[in-house]
Image: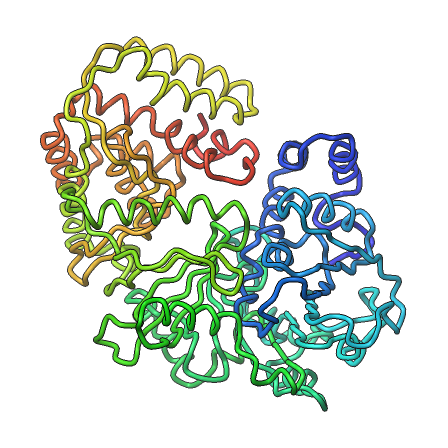
Length: 597
């Protein structure tokens, strides 16, 4: 990382964004314009760096129960990892050597966490940091060990001096076999020769044992160690390395990877995991429960169930953290929970929507299997939703197994056809604008490519001519039904539909089933979004089980062939409208990049 520039952005781009925000342009608008001005690779790295879910380790810290605790974040101020600290009540100070990054972070945090002040200090590489002894309850060093070669003059002992509570070190493993490039889903997996060479050149990095030895010091407890998997720049799981809790999820697909299983069996995971997080508290804090322990204790009291153990901590792409727990008995329902914790203010609306639909569907005649909603409340100052954990696997674990996939599609066709709320409605002007016109408006506003805007205008005109006056059913729409949101048995039969945060109570039919079918093809064949769309809408390329699921659904809800074809053609617009309605900012040229529309 080059600390002389506002990585990954060039100086001119970030200065234009800063000038716009300081002139009164809202943060979201200025940030979206910034992403449009840079190349796609730079935009991808910037968005990845700023994801708030990179701070999911917050739940594992001891931290005081009251707001107003002081936290110091040392590293790239553009990181989204410190936004959850401010969101959850910390008085935040950022230390960075780049003034542009600090200015940007101050304006961003003010927009994302209104009412919270972010203090900034531009570091100068001095050996002694400009803070008093034990000034901060939490000190976070996200970019690994302090290193003079990268402009930091202080050392770990200096961090311990200013730490009055807990010190968190996020660092890369010297023996990591792969690393994120900073772009979502793009990893660097070296050849054996390059891997061996890289180990020799990573002089500022350590193994897990090395970091543990450096983090241990008089007055501090033995550091608690976690792997950020697959990489600190893009991790999904926080995996415990000290005991049985916080395991790495290994589904049926991973269990067929004999090298991964052998590595697990012989204890190689701590040696090869790309990134670590080590948390070390002052000894007087040793008995202080972690935030996740306090949340689970509060839930247990509310539900009258035993405090469960945490099996998995998941950092989602939607900037929330998910805790999957298990009670004293793996067979009993008590203590078996799925707990959602929002890591940004924007997540609260979707979490509330999710719980509203769980309650509606769990207590209605629609017969749509969903998790049992349990609690929606604040615990330890954190907004939390809790539902009963569902057994089985998420459907991606069975992707490629055609018999199981056919069973899932058949079940979904039947379940979704039961979500009709109005059987036979005429699509007049007002309803067209509500269901389709508003979506075209939203998508066009964010298209940002003239040829795409022209295509959208033409498609809107032809669609209006084709559908005005037609009759169709209206349904409860999940709106984001992908295979990861469907829990299944080993034979593919559906146990429950998860994650209703984007759901709509009265909307277009068929979209959910088509969306699921298209994404299942994408998973199985590694297709681009355009390819999955074109294949899914081609009757000649559908498998018999896919066509049967579609035909059965349309017959059950009363959707005619003409209207079905229109909805298939509109799929890029519908999915784009869904994401634009729920994203905290628009991704640059998303519709054109994904669907070449």
